[in-house]
Length: 365
Ligand code: SF4
Image (cartoon, rainbow, N blue to C red; front, side, top):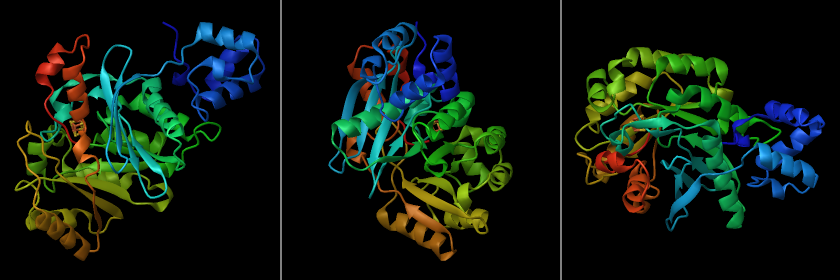
């Protein structure tokens, strides 16, 4: 199989072109086409000689995952189910904001971490995404916006789709570097947010290799409850996790984000809010409350509106910036894993029988 050119950074592409006897600027031209212009074929590269386009086409692939299903709600939130070359299905979600779009991308097929409130977890872990499979989600979203004639730019990328990003560390960091490169995609580093359930060693590595905006999926304010909801908490107690968060550089003095799924009668009482406030009182964080998105196959419920507001009110009263995530895309299976499950049940996909039997439900990383 030909290597996919989206796996490579500019220096690597320049070297490939050099090996083909071309001057370095040809590498820059090709890179511009596959990043800024989101090209999907060498034929589109109109400022390259035809003979070079043919040579590139013989040596490299530019293929993208196949869009097998798209759901769009009335607010414009759009969810893509994408089929990879080996038949696996991943999801990405495009979310309209006031003056830009945010894209939520996946980093793995399935996930090994087994959070009890998550549909993706029920499918188990299949494999890590390759660099080009991560980048391709951005290319597809850019092309989609262009085809729709959308004027607002795609400005934010959040690594909060399927999978634990830090468990696919090497490919994640390379994809982040390609997305930030000013000569190509040119995303601002503070607009590239990596979410993690708390792989502490990898948080320290990321702090050295690519300190960027970080979102910690906490979901419980004490070890006992966190262990019940997130098996990874057995390995990393809150004390160790919060130290790693404190040690993680803040991009341009921004705040780290704490993601907290509010689940009815599990972690949504005022006692939990107090415990949470005590953890973060003196830290520059933003707590993002995410009311649980119910699913028939998950044993949890969404708290009533008053309870959600009371939880937020308490945190605000303690001087902690706290937002409630609007449930964008509730009507379009937007919670992580739901569209994938629907698609797997609908299409005949090789090796998916075991998945069909085991995928249950999912929310968000
Ligand atoms: S919530 Fe995130 S980390 Fe936990 S199982 Fe689901 S995808 Fe994995």
